[in-house]
Each structure stands twice: as structure tokens, then as C-alpha cells.
Length: 76
Image (tube, rainbow, N blue to C red; front, side):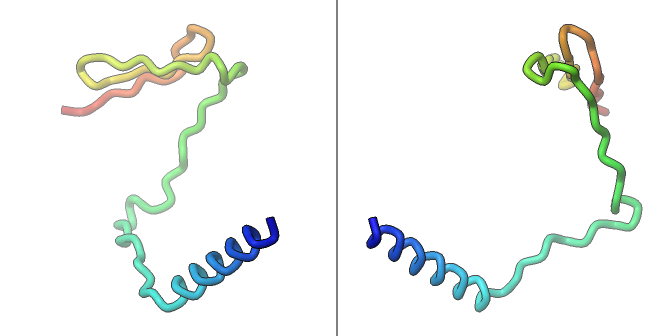
């Protein structure tokens, strides 16, 4: 057990050292009109009943307890 913990710590120390020497890859910058858009949130009283219905035209519905909460349309 002690050997397992020691090898785990050594492995993690090696990963931390490798991460400091590797070049940092940053995601591409977003255009100003796409930055900080509010994230829509939906509330469902019983999360276990959440369901996603997909249709052939690639649209969808998010349902909670059999009620449609959100309709998602795909342009095109």
C-alpha cells in the first residue's frame, strides 16, 4: 500500500514538472460579439424525468415530466 502511494506521488510530481516545461496552448480568441453570452438555464422540478426528444430535421425538445421546456431549432 505504501509503495502504491509513493509511486502515485512520484508519477504526479513528474506530471507537474512536465506541465511547467511544456508550451501552453491557448484556445483561439473569440470575436467580441461572442464573448460572455449569458448561458440559458432551464429548471426541472424532478431532474430524473428530463428527456431529450430528437426529430429527423435535427430539431429537438427538452422535456420535464412530460412537458416541453425548450424547443431547439436548427437553421438551414
